[in-house]
Length: 169
Image (cartoon, rainbow, N blue to C red; front, side, top):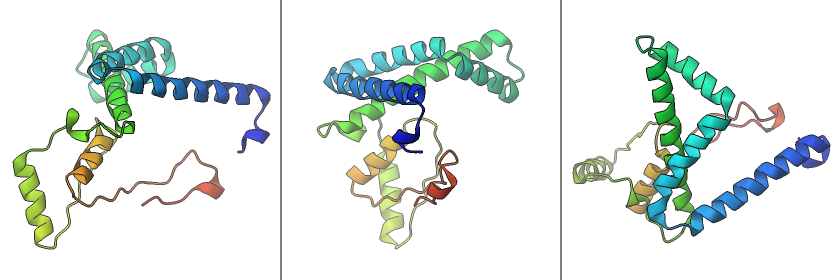
């Protein structure tokens, strides 16, 4: 759907989100890097407080995954999840700074590098499978920075209009 076909209220909402995101990125890039984990944790706490549907779904899903936990423990775990997501958000934001190195907060051991080099040296490839848990974007950037060829694959966007759905590789 193009911007011109949105209802006025939807246009205002999307414009407000765009404005807020653009200025949040600018602010994040202007902050000292040492502040980003604390700022990210604060963003996660604010999101937990304001996004009641997401908070409720998170706690409901935790009750399915961890039925042995009582509600208080599930709420505490949800709080940790939102805090970590906020930290990962600001950590990923740092990738937009061209002077920032992906290994600032994410490392790779010398044994892992040796294993990758051995596999690639033998003409074999390496499949690194992950999902949206943790700083997965930074791992790809870290591997690329270390000289390893990377390719990302994903599934089509289920939220896109049918005519725009494609396989992304």
